[in-house]
Image (tube, rainbow, N blue to C red; front, side, top):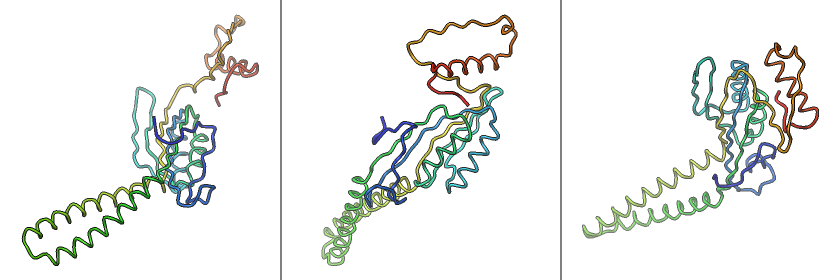
Length: 231
């Protein structure tokens, strides 16, 4: 399981600190989401996603298009400014039918500020080692100090990289998105605890499948047997 808070699709995410939301100043939150979409109009949905990402100041970190028989599937990773995380998810739901949406947030404040403090310590240590090296009188001391300097420089490089990575993940949220082209959208899920008996007129035998399933979905929705209604 992912660390942090697991939030379902119906829960509003708290605003990142950078956006001026209700979080205390200095809190570092990483927002991530996994989104599964499906559509019968693949080109239109894909274009709508492109426009949404561009308008919200994001970009596609990776993007792959697969062809399976007559249907296509887009798999991509989107990076978007943290304050545009929820707006992007909303725009994705408008572009295509949202099958699932799992959003997460991870508070990395402690790890971030711990790394920041360690970096300060290592930089101070580096300055002291450089001073001692300039004063070293024996080859043995020089070799030992140069070894310590090399190790300290590696630690500084590692901690600097960690902070840059945190800054990137906090400042720009990540959305892993799948867009699938389908013949028909996912049908409503029936509630548990009901037995359904269908009685159809004789002319329905030759009726189009899409019209029959649509009529069934509407009937179930009208009597409250479905959890959601597909668009």
